[in-house]
Length: 348
Image (cartoon, rainbow, N blue to C red; front, top):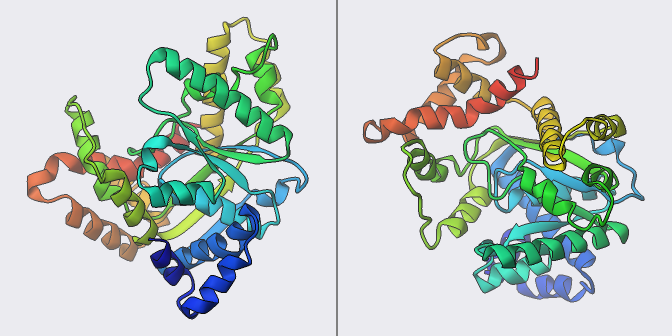
């Protein structure tokens, strides 16, 4: 698997030249800059029609941040943001990933070589509490040592396109606050809301079985290779255009929430909603989102914002994924792309 990754990254180099590159790496920073950066660049070249960013120019190059991000793709979300951070000469992130994603030894090794740290899943309540406290302390330690962090705003990917911050994520982050209030403590972590949007999600069809099961109130069980297949499809599948937007959470937001006569849990819920509003506001909408909205609502509200070619391209994608036998999934598929539009509309 490593050889395949290296051959994909450096197709013009022979094995001896590739080994020389690896031998020149004496740190994780070296490996990320000399190998992984070029791997991500090759993914962008091969599987997208454009990669753009906004908000990175507002960052302080001498400051660490906690990037709290919507989450669509297992590997690429954090890979793309680090690619953008390197392009802007910013501190790259250590990234939180579920331990269920690195069951293959190749992926565990690669995750360590790219500064990922594991979030333990499938623990008892007592074990989960201890693990969360340890994770909170680790994140505080990294940020204090000028190491930025990437975390998803919720456990697992958002499969229905409706990006929402889990209050429990904020609660975990604040576990190491001591006697300080949760909101005051979180204010010091320099949280940056992140919205990553793919014009086409290469894993959309892989997300359908879970969405259909959820809509029918059925239990969904992952297959043994489901996460790995999603990683491969996500990395190599066509995405068309990709955009990453960084937002801001001004100090006044924390101060306003802190001043309210609410319980700590309700204050965390309010902060989660503020993060959501920021993510929804900065989310880059593509023609695919607007077409899906119009098809879902049977309207032409956004017809002025996309072309007939855009509409046909999306309809062909829909037809390939939703056959007569799986018509129940049509609404789920459309909402996967339409929800970012609905969320942005709800801001006004």
